[in-house]
Image 1 (cartoon, rainbow, N blue to C red):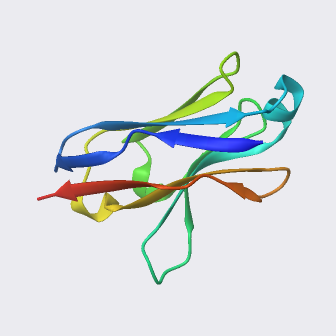
Image 2 (image 1 turned 180 degrees about the vertical axis):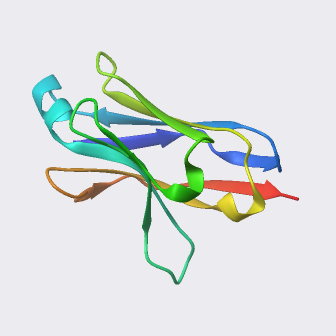
Image 3 (image 1 turned 180 degrees about the horizontal axis):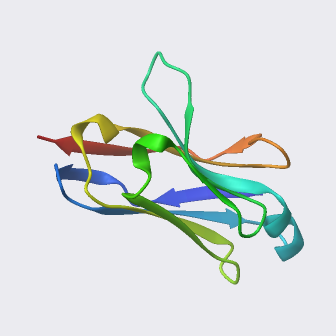
Length: 117
């Protein structure tokens, strides 16, 4: 499985962005049974969970993004999305897509999100 991310960029506070992560090479049963979702990391700090699917439909969000970010999936395309609304400067980070059986062991290349005040 290879994770290919897209989206990200620079926006002003209050704006929106959408990230996409395609799990290339994953058969449907594998895609549905693994954890997949988004983490973020500032250089020098630990990678933290933003929003993930734990199983096909159960979602987990960081408290800091609840009500602002929404994770969704398209099983046909083996793709997960992260819709980020009401962005804040503190959301500035490198966002990584992660995939794995109980915790991610495959990572995407990361995509930069920058929110200016």
